[in-house]
Length: 509
Image (cartoon, rainbow, N blue to C red; front, side, top):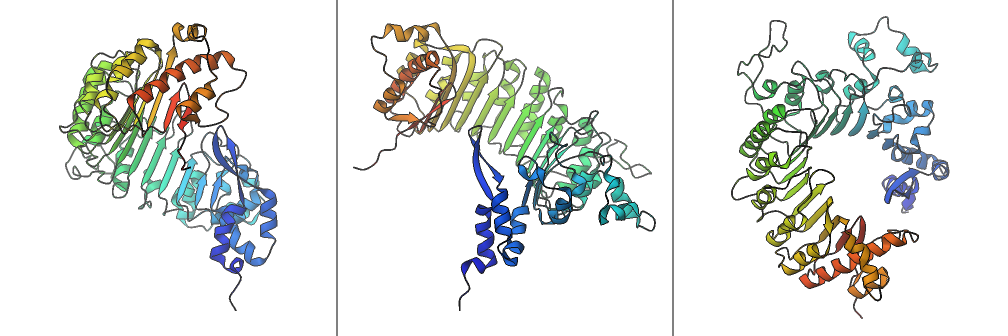
């Protein structure tokens, strides 16, 4: 006799992923939360259901969901089932990391913090055991001296994705011994650490064989020579900062994605680091550069990372210092994605971007403040980048007026395969007068339907925003005329001032 499908653990486990969690919208994005009634009902069906669904329930623990309300005793008892643990630094008061007994984590978002006051007052068996220090092995005593986050790191050698936050002022020192057993780590994010005395270099050497993505955010104490040259050991076995050439050849040969956020860095450490990344494909940085360091970084990046496909830059520096970073790419270019947030001016930047016109597929330009933007000039990218599928232009330092639209309509666009077009540009006085100048201004939904478009989300606009709707209707009318005149048949999403429109799919009659 064949067993009932719900008596097969593998089938029941799959069904359990839908039974225990419910989806609900939050800030226009779907999110998931536990359904307490469903949990209680499912776990009480039978011993088989309890045994099978409990690991499913605990597969992911996130303090951003209702799981932070789980009693401490239950966390101690069942958290060994966890494979993904998310307790970020900005919510340390919700969950005490010392409660977790995980040893098979694959992904973790953790913060460094000392044991909480009162943790030793635990009356459980585990609490009594932690107070019995006499007779313990040195390794056990060492683990107890570490923070809860460090203990979790050292107890989970199978970690593949790690977000590790210092979560302190001043930044705590990074301990590379926490990473000694992580041989399968491929994604690492470090936030708010003091990496003095060569700690970052030691860490990168440990994970060099597996690391594919690296994000460094507000890292202190790193010296350029630590990353550009090898450091010789002293008599005590510690780095002295003197190059000896013994390990000068180490490289992050697997690294494909590098992110660096530090507005107070001069970029010299980053210039040294990219030399260690020969197969880098995506580079994201947020920092201020002077002309000299921007040129050095550009030369290092394009010389040592010839396969770079994506460049994302956010800076408060004048745009001319970004030009070498963009312009110095190889010929022929391999850059496919370029996103820039800067404060202007525009002189020379458009020409630098056009160096990659033959390969660019994704372009985003953001100007929130600073000098006035030459929006029409940036539209040359639409005219001269034939492979473009995504284009976004955001600025409050220009006008979405008739001159702008005429420039778009008069030129032939090379990007016939454009799929997403996003404009968020300051509204001109001309737009505000447009409704009065037209004898009849149709409702924007009627305009959309006639042109073959619709709102991507029915809640995109509130009904009481009448003046905003009138101005947006003027922009929308112009934009749809422009799309129609250019024959952009593959365009499926149009965004105007954060409102999304999608093309109505044609259905056979």
